[in-house]
Amino acid sequence: MPTADAAPVLAKARRRLIPFLFLLYIVAYLDRINVGFAALQMNRALGFSASTYGFGAGIFFLSYVLFEIPSNVILARVGARLWIARIMITWGLVSSGMMFVHGVTGFYTLRFLLGLAEAGFFPGIIFYFTRWFPPRERARTIATFMTATLTAGVIGAPISGALLSIHGLGLAGWQWLFVLEGLPAIVLGFVVLFVLPDGPDTARWLSDAERAAVRDALSGGRVSGHADGGDPSPLSDPSPSTREALSSGRVWLVSVSHFLLIPVALYGIGFWMPQILKSASGASDFIVGVLTAIPYACGAVAMVIAGRHSDRTGERRWHVAIAAAVCASGLVLSTMAAGPVWSVVTLSLAMIGLAGVFGPFWALASVTIRGTGAAAAIALINSVGNTGGFVGPYLLGAINDAMHSFAMGLYAIAAMLLLGGALVLGVRDGGLADAGRHSSS
Image 1: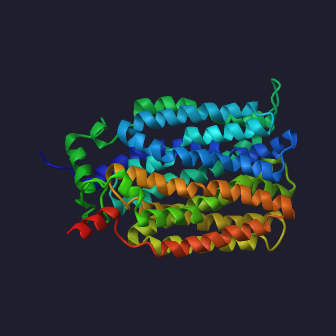
Image 2: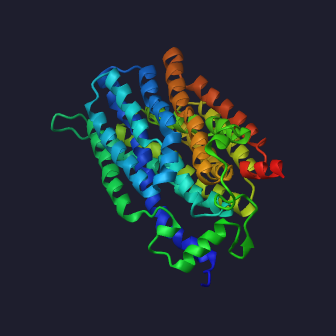
């Protein structure tokens, strides 16, 4: 049977998969960070201090980290369709349940359960991409998908600000926010069961020749008239075990880099940006939502541009390091003056830099190891990194309580970004499977 040209088949796969997965990630990210907008009313209504709020916002990531590796291994074994549906339905139920929070214990408990429910979603999607797209096209694909993180801010910030104005049926605006933003995850979870294939072999919209073209591209075949860029394919060689993946020094170096580069900054900024802009502007909740959307919009554009440039040049590490330095600069500059205009401009610069890290970083991380081991390695990288999702929000909250200023917390995050960029420059080329092959020869 003749094999179809890989380039149009991969383009077809992107058209079929990315918009739907993009929508899922928008809902996921919105349900993860909407507590930042709820806090504009919830903290005052429930008497939460900045430290209490920061701890509760961040505790999501402790349970997320604990269950992430087993969740991703389960996904690799039972298939993306069933497991992603399970993740979405349970996180939607817990997210809506946040409306019942009446005190600190309930707040901490439900945020912990939300992390447990959502664990494995993002690394599962990254692993899913390794079943569809060869390494040389992965930064663009990942960057396009991950613009959902920032699109959720662009779309969700004004919506969240507007939902805070709803009052009725005995519920405050922050309670309506949780209810109405949790329901889409439940609905889409059931949709996943019907529309998401586990991989090319079960995609009914591919012909046999097109399936063969995807397999050929993943195993080092030619895409768009060029040989694959030499990065290891997740399906090309026998898979190292999960144990080998989790003991790889390269995997751990990438994991620590992830901690320093993305979650600390992303969630430190994301969970506190509405309150930073509220303090700078004194505006209504809706206007704060509109202002919050601007940095996210700037970041979304930067993310796509950086991902495409990284794919075109084939370079990953310097793309990450330079983008991290830009983000650090924006955070430092944001502390040097007051006022809404300065805050929006400098936070936009920070988001531009942070967004530029995503695609090149995950393209680098996703070629670390192959097969089922890849699921564990990607989950480890995301798990170690996402402990930063606890550190960032709690750090800013604790420092704000102690000093009544976000400045020192933002300086600390900027320093972590610079260190993370330096560590990425030390990540060697090639994956664990290559190293194992060389050592055994």
